[in-house]
Length: 339
Image (cartoon, rainbow, N blue to C red; front, side):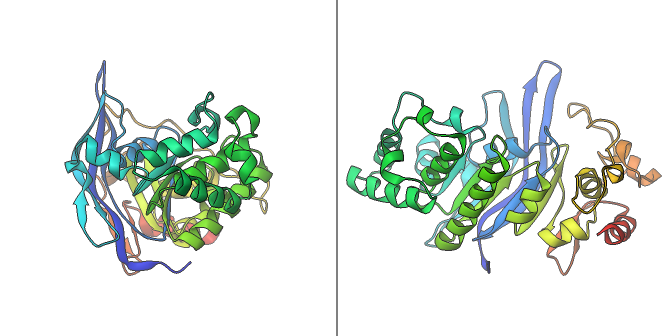
């Protein structure tokens, strides 16, 4: 897909999020910055607990009560060109923003749908909250259900338990597009489904994105899924984006040691199981994180400077990508060798 690189719909700058715990403040997201362009799919990859879901809850201001956005800005640009900082929105403004400008497909389709409501009830409730009448809402929903390859009329009148997991996931995708938002955030949408259903969901998502030109933030621990769906990939580790760039650069010409470690730990059809490499150790304590690079205690490339000095984000490929690693040259050489 060709992207409108001149239009940035979401500009995130230096966003930090922390949770209040018994031992102190957990720095779950630290100084995260990125731009999301019109029609672009950005995949966030990384181990569980690295901050992917927390970041996306921050983007829609839906963090739990013990969490806070400590710094940064989240600038959203409307279709008419107006730009606002979402951190300045009150609850009323955020309610208007959610679903109509940015929607989210949460992990776990069964838990995301109210079991005592028909799909039609969910459609009407969502539409009514944004001033859309029942007839218009039904017309939009039926068309979207057809676009995600469902029996539209049957699904419209169904309860969640009357549908399979894959059907429920596609219903959620359709509902997320009901109010024609510019951005859809998807949190592990293919985790609990079989491989054939996963294939179907990804095909539907790519088709809808091509037709409707919305932007996607796609959270995934499945590198193969991220490689297929994304235009841009951001690697998160211990609350930080340590590398971000075009999908082929990140996956085949990695500049950060953690990105390369993730790729080496993922199974490939072209390689035997004996070639898999585990990542030693555990992620750092985010209440008292180590000095220097947060990955240095687990990193095969670590040098003395890595233990004392946080690496700066350095641009590559004419600014298309960025990585925060002191050993970029060595990592890149090994990535090219293994590609």
